[in-house]
Length: 86
Image 1 (cartoon, rainbow, N blue to C red):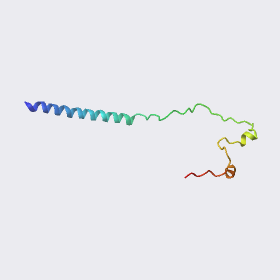
Image 2: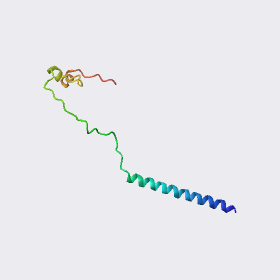
Image 3: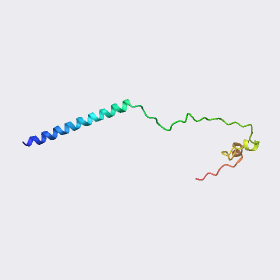
Image 4: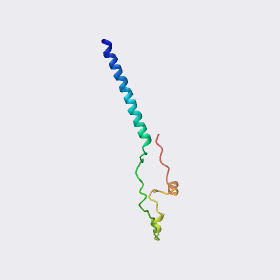
């Protein structure tokens, strides 16, 4: 009679494993058959985008300025070299 309990527990474990495997296969099959979702944000294809053009030109002083360059390369050549510290 002692083996009866162990045999039942083993059978129960085996059936639970088979049930889990069936459920997993069913989930995999469902995932394969359903349409894939979209990744990322949706593109608004229905919104019209129009380019804006103007005939106005920038003033020469604004057009020639470059805010990212504080010094021109010719200004750097005239400057004294930086002192080297040991």
